[in-house]
Picture 1 (cartoon, rainbow, N blue to C red):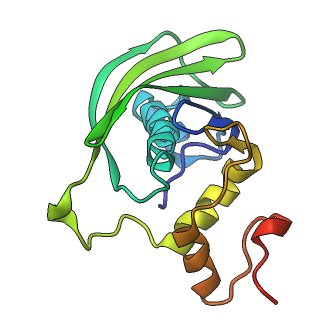
Picture 2 (cartoon, one colour; picture 1 turned 180 degrees about the horizontal axis):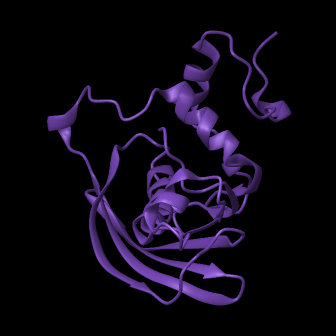
Length: 191
């Protein structure tokens, strides 16, 4: 995944809710170039940040074994612009999750002010897409660690969120690169 529109997770409750943040910076080319002379975060990128937050929430529900894609944007209402120096707080809540996909409601806030409201529909790709990888598993896990998902994540039982075995195995089999974030002691590779 090349473009990240979230910086880190603040909360992550498996199958239920996730909260992530995105710092808006003038150093980002898309901010300066979107509306020259009036630097704002494009609404489409705010939708993408909420979609990444919600998509990871939906994907984690099945241990990241399903290939999750954004299928539809049901609603998008923007109440105010986000400008350089702002920190967007994305909240994604699962409304319904089924074997073929999920519905997620999302909001974006600037401090206490509601910035945007959206409804997202995600689909799980079926067997016609077998063999089509969205991410390399070790790189995907590195991204999740960078976002702090396993630092704040909670499973359905309220305990710490665990890295799925297939992602840990891919990480251990990778080319010897160290992880971006230290592994918890219970995930340390064998000596």
